[in-house]
Length: 267
Image 1 (cartoon, rainbow, N blue to C red):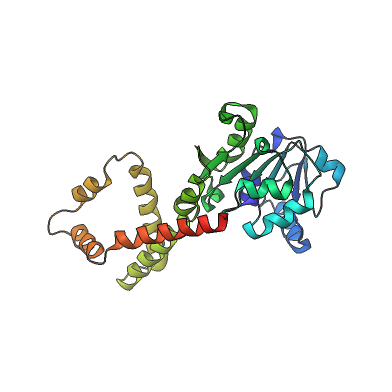
Image 2: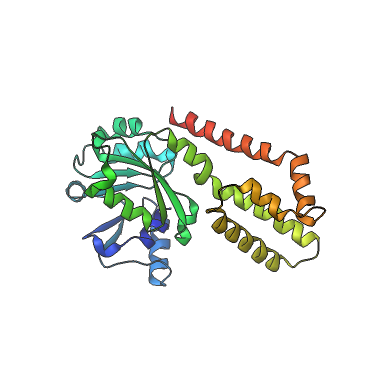
């Protein structure tokens, strides 16, 4: 995710960009990607293992693009280095109260976000929550800065309550995996009925892209399903199996389980 954000952000808007990576092997891999042109880098970018206190004190933004289990360790390492940088976290399930505790940091300089893997293609949607004194942050310089970073990888959705991020995690954060699961089943079925796997993957992927794009503007998806399902036709037959197996119930249960787990991780 950090790599996707870095590749697509407007690097020219920043005087210095530090990519902090503790793994020497990963640093070699990133540099190799950059040298081969696979990773879009910039002259002001430095890939380092550790920031010095003097450099960290001069930062305007710190993006915590690490796994939830790594947040405490990372925050402990940079705790006390700076009280002025604006901290943005993408870690799922780690609420602002925990980040404040780990950093000993004021709430009006911390924001939480939840992007998803579609960032790789610039097609993510990122939920953003801010719990500072300025509730209209999106209209401020900091709000514009946060929006600018995440619109580089797709769309943004500002939410009023931190608990909304648990819902966003269950829907769009984990969502790509749900779609890949469905895609994989459809591709396997296509192969079983005679199509080449490469053709099947192309057909399934484009169908999902097209349905998603058109579905954004359909007010009643249930009515649209009925329109497509001609009586006695192929779509009606497939939908009847979905209903018989209660596919809608299974999907709802899965999303609610993900939502519950996100809430558990936040405690």
